[in-house]
Length: 461
Image (cartoon, rainbow, N blue to C red; front, side):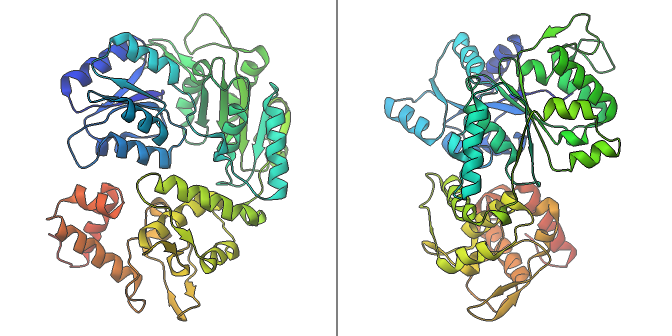
């Protein structure tokens, strides 16, 4: 059953076991791993907080892990643990993105205190919602005003326009900012699990319910719950959600008493809700309960001044303290401004990550801007046309970095991708994990690509 968890990253097995036992005794769900690499694999949407050791065996330490987590999940609170702590290290950790820092050895109550203080808190900066477009500046000002109220807000807009970022901005500017922000994607959880995930359940209420679990509404107590893709919720569950909102109380599955709620509700959708209502797919009374204050995020193609501002923010996030932030050349920026961005900010993020991989020097050039889609990329400077690698046509692979260099524009990108992977694999003596890290892709993606190479008859060490 889906429930929010704390991720423990500790390579000392005895200490790891003690940390897990302490947190579980205090009713937290815990996932424990022994390396930073395993932590990145375990980092799914149900992780609500991370405790990580700083010094660990392997190629990645706690600082590097923290930077990678901050790049992909800037809102996730991270507490670093070390036996080698100094005031300087503590200050550096906080500057790099940690919400707190504890020195080993520490008492069990210190661990529990930190968990209670930061679990489900939003560690991102309010300025994650960046904008330069006049209409968006007005929307941001309106969001700050509505944040002061308890009004329910429904955010509409295409997928990838930043609806959750806006929801977090509203929460972070509200009186509830020091309380939990709990986000749930209603379309990502199987229908038969969504009710228990939202409302919780008691032990023995159904097969597999081995212990009682609070739902998302209870976890958001005192704070904000964000119901993303609310338009995908089925009719029977809509009726139950409406009752929870009306009565301001929730009853767990199999429970005998209701739990009073103090929760602000924000929701989001990328579908036309009026059409969903007229077709009978969404309850009109629930819609008006959620849509007290509607806010619409325009598509990125309709806010061109935001492209440069968001690209700059993404460069800062992905570079962090690990590398010098590059400049963006005028032709490169022109390429970003002229593209229609069907995938919105999510697609822009992919393009920025690719540019950081393929660029050379201190400036991102136009040839470093590799765009999604079936379209070809035309480089005006040399009149050559390059096709995107097949992996970018696959939705599941679209967020991975492009594995190509810029040494020879006459060589097909697919061939350069293959050569770079095999060269890096040989340089690392066939070690898959080190090769994946060097290429800045996941081990799963590397295994997939090597399997394809073998099918094509290529020699893979």
